[in-house]
Image 1 (cartoon, rainbow, N blue to C red):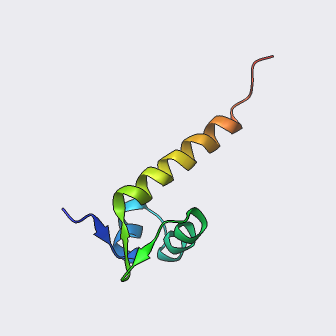
Image 2 (cartoon, rainbow, N blue to C red):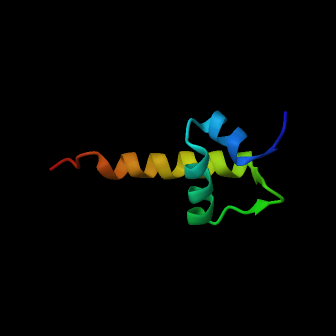
Image 3 (cartoon, rainbow, N blue to C red):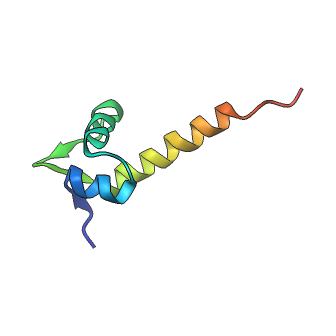
Length: 62
């Protein structure tokens, strides 16, 4: 199983568009080295951002 994927391969695995993968890498500071991205780092960052976004959108009890 490959750990370093191209933006196209990573987009396919994460359900995003290729362009969105590249934008998120730049936004989150994930390095793209020789056209490849660390799959583990990208997916863990995506999960962390997604879970923190969902928690902040939940209504707070009064």
